[in-house]
Amino acid sequence: MTFAPAPPTQKRFRLGLRGQLLLVFGMVFGLATLAAGSYQYRSLGRQLARADDERLRLRAEQLLSRVSLDPQPTLPLPDQTGETMRLVFEEAGRPARELFRSDGWPARDTGGLPRPAAPGHELRHGRVVAVARLAAPPGPGADYAEPTGRLTLWLAHPAAPLEKALARVRRTLWLGLLGSAGLAGALALLVAGVALRPLRRMAAQARRIQQAQDIAPLPVPDTGDEVQELAETLNQLLTRLRGQATSQANFLAAAAHELRTPLATLQTGLDVSGRDPALPPATRAALAGHDAELARLSRLVDDFLLVGRLGNGAALPLRRRPVALAELLLALADRELPRFRAAGRTLTIELPEEDSAVQATVETDADQLTTLLLNLLDNARKHARPGTGVVLRLQAGPVISIENELAAPLGNHLAQLTTAWYQADPLAPGTGLGLWIAGRLAQGLGLQLALAEAHGRLRVTVGFGGRADNLTR
Image (cartoon, helix red, strand yellow):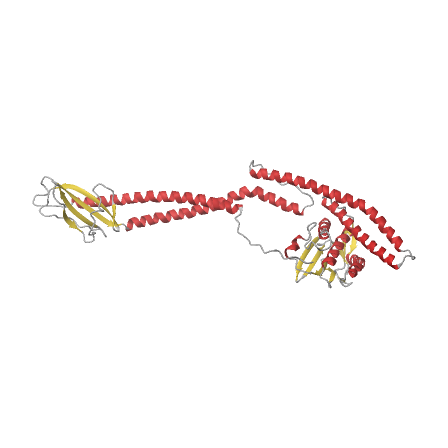
């Protein structure tokens, strides 16, 4: 067999339905959580800033209440870490008098200072608020004189505590976002599992249909959605395919049955005519060739008859009786040896010693087992590498194995060899039914049929799985 190498295909990543649901849930939950978190962060930031301003304003009012302008300005200094302040007296019609400025107060701040009762402002790396009270100009008796101006105190402190609080809020929100993403993933998997459960049941039923003898309908979920519509549509398609398969099987069975009688009559006539001693050698040789072709057609018709019966879903009747496997293999070798010689192949049969426990007698249908093994031998004879042989072996188990060298590696074709009408090499002789028939017969007999490729050889095994009734030693 020769196989044309498959053209290289470039694999593209495609996201499955479960992955799409996971992505959609993740994006929806993520964006919603991000938007809600951003809003909460801004709201909490404003609340924390207002609370910080209120605390600072209270502190500033306490300091301002302790300021004395009599006879000279006397004021308490800030005793909190990082606090700075500025004190100014303002009187109508006169320039403002700066009474005090902390060392750490910015040199140019006139444009960024808040007015009294206004929200706090950012000042360099801190927050600043302003408080004021009416006062007389500094001097003797100023604390008791009639107020003519306003005393304003600006108090600033570092923004590090507020930043730390905001950092904690950010961490909490990010943890919430990650938790929401994890929750979204879990919910997506749960929803995908529930949503895809009917599809998985349909897929499982479809896989069973591939190996079943009949086409059973897919389960229809009572969901009233597109999944139910899909299941009903697929069942309509399967019903049509089942009808077509039944019609095809019936046609094959009927045609094969009708052809068997005329082919048998022609073959009998050729056999009788070929025995006439008066025939010239050339005519006898031609008749022998016609007889071989008729035998091939008869085997093909028998295969079609089996395809019709097996493909119709009907189980073949079993007539079980004790069968000595060694004797059966010897009879098969004698029967097939002429065909192997005509094809230029050798057939080697390996049997255990007479005193070996592998000499088994099994309870099975001899005719169906013979047909199964004949199809396997016929496949090995057709597709073995030219100039090589086929080995028919009986082993412990009991297991019957057939080995042949391959003309080319099977690769991915190996898994499809037991499919009806499948040929790895379309130019090779045959109809692609031999291994399919063997697989169906093995299934009906309860045997294990396995194909394996190793080191350029194809090995087909038929295991009886402990069906041996007795082992002769």
